[in-house]
Amino acid sequence: MAGMDGDGLLTIGALAERTGLTVKAIRYYSDTGLVPSTDRTAAGYRRYGAEALARLELVRTLRELGLGLDAVRRVLEREESLAEVARAHADALDLRIRTLGRQRAVLRAVAAHGTDPEETALMHRLIRLSAAERREMVEEFLDDTFGTADANPELVAMLRAAVPDPPEDPDTEQLTAWAELAELTRDQDFRASLRRMAAYQAEQRADGDTTGLHHEPTERVREVAGAALAAGTAPGTPAAAAAVAELTARYAETFDRPDDAALRDWILRRLEVAADPRVERYWALLSRINDWPAPPETAPHAAWFAAALRAVARPPGAVAGPGSAGALPGGGRNGRMTGGGGS
Image 1: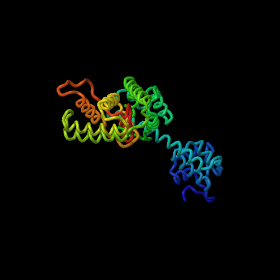
Image 2 (image 1 turned 90 degrees about the horizontal axis):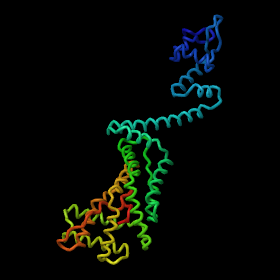
Image 3 (image 1 turned 45 degrees about the vertical axis):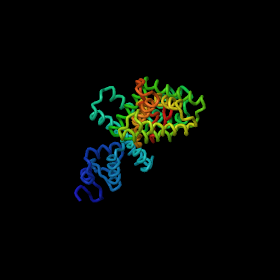
Image 4 (image 1 turned 90 degrees about the vertical axis):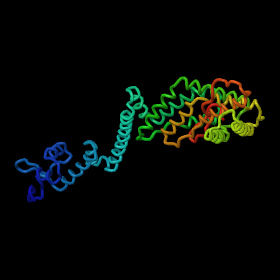
């Protein structure tokens, strides 16, 4: 074989041809001690044996896998096993891949939505938050809202458990939802609205309402009001009055109260306290970030029910009062969580 002498040793040129590495690279590895030559000719030319060839093949493989020279040296000198070095390098690559995935997500979101520099910086900061930092953000938000009064403990526990948990490589919609959710939690008007909901819950609890989250009447409002909306039933019509009667009867049973005008006023206040569409938006964003099923829409059903209640309460020809309920106080992960007063 060309480049091999009678002792079976290879010249540096033959070794380069055998391995595909350059003569310069082999000389560098020899000079640094990674692949020392087996011996030298009388003229000082390096020669390499089978062990040097195997060592050089390993160096090339490890370098192509991205290992640094120090890590390669530790393997060659048996200071660390190849498995240990490979595991550490794989872990480092995992971290790098996650980082690149997040950076790609931010860039895609910017390209898709034309976000301004401030929003771009926010998305980049949010995507780098650890799980503990995301939880801390939610805890601060809830401490400042539902933590200000003796609100429904089941609701508060559910809220605290619902932490944004985006995937390692979020898509554009998840990233923009994360940015919007962060902005929403910093909205002082929204926080004030939630504090009013918490205060109402505390008031109800002081009056003895410890019946929980009231999922069943909330679902029934969606069903009955949804059917009325689909049929084009206007508040104030006999069909709407029948729907109201069905729903107030369900409330009376759930809360063990007489089915009378006082109950209708009480239900209406609950709906009005919770009439903030941002509650529903909060849960929709959280569901998108965490890849949960989208919560069912509640705002149109609550608004129709509130309008129908007012129509029943006022005499024919009377002028409707200002305001309308915009959302049931719910819309959690399964669309069953009550927020403000509960439905």
